[in-house]
Length: 150
Image (cartoon, rainbow, N blue to C red):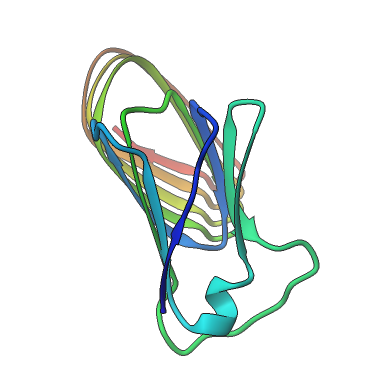
């Protein structure tokens, strides 16, 4: 099942957990598509509050899946990304003045593009790969088994 989600409010930060997310930046139109088994797709919430897009399982939900669960997000740009709880995120098309990314609790993030300044943080077995990012300055912090590739 593939379901298009409406994102009416503006956002500059994305927070996600558990899901596999592909973010395509530099797109003129905002779109968000959730793809997977119907019972799982229905349990994934996509909400925007206070400039933050949250993509995560509905509170209290529990599911198992035989097919991959993938969320595809297209938008002009974001400046901040937080991934937790074994989430898997790929970001392409980064092009902005600054970008912050964090991965915690076994989350994995890969980012490509360019930015003036980059801050990357990984902890609790989280992993951030920014080898595909061109930047003038970078600040990294890794703790508790976190790993950053830069």
